[in-house]
Image (cartoon, rainbow, N blue to C red; front, side):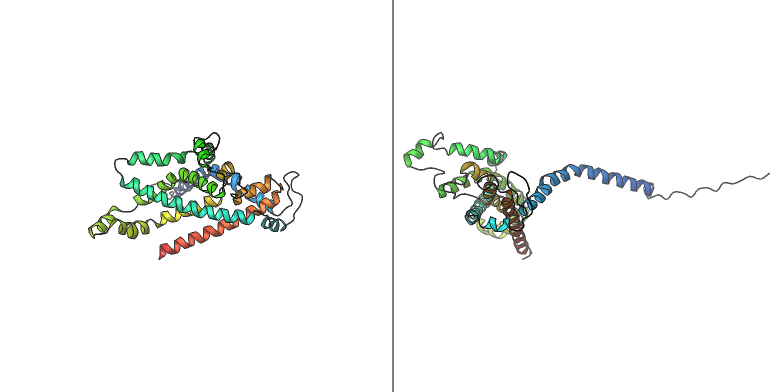
Length: 313
């Protein structure tokens, strides 16, 4: 009588944890799918609200596209000379650069000063942080409307004083600029204070202690320790502030609407005016948008390279 012996199947290779490689691959695939599902809402947000409008702007910039009537054919590059020939183009560029320099200096300087004040104050630290940060919770458009009422020569709380002194907050180009800068400083100083405070708290206390033992004064410690170690934070805040200031729109549109005498028109407001007021030409507005985008990219590259070079030195 003979018996048939069935050969045993070879053992499945396992890892040190006892799991088969196939199961590990399935688990990794499942984790990858889960990760893509979590990233999908953000990806859709970027595609719908950034990439699609960007493609549309480039299409408008190379087309004859009036506000009413839709695309009437390609006319590249005719829109770009028309954009540069706009009578308010150079004035808006000069004003925007002037506003950007002033806003950046004020916000970075005041933000750093407030951060140092909050860091050194122990008794009122919590109150000061909250007080400086509260305006940042208000939307820029809402803050602009609030200051529009405050600056009103008719219904504002300072109306009687302005009539007595013959002064208006928004009546002259310089007054309109500085009144708007006051709004921006009030709205964003707390936000930049918070960024600076995070950078200051990242500096080791041992470094300050060693400097004090060596007899360093407050100014020497600030100049030789705080500023050099705070350069990454200063670089970030400067890039953010410059970019935001170059794209200023809401505050000037609500407070001044480009006045008085078109003296406070920013480049973004000029794009709005070309698209929806006056010539109503989306093609020329798209060309202006492309020019502004290219300028922003160049300015940010220059800033990042400059700060990177300083950090290496």
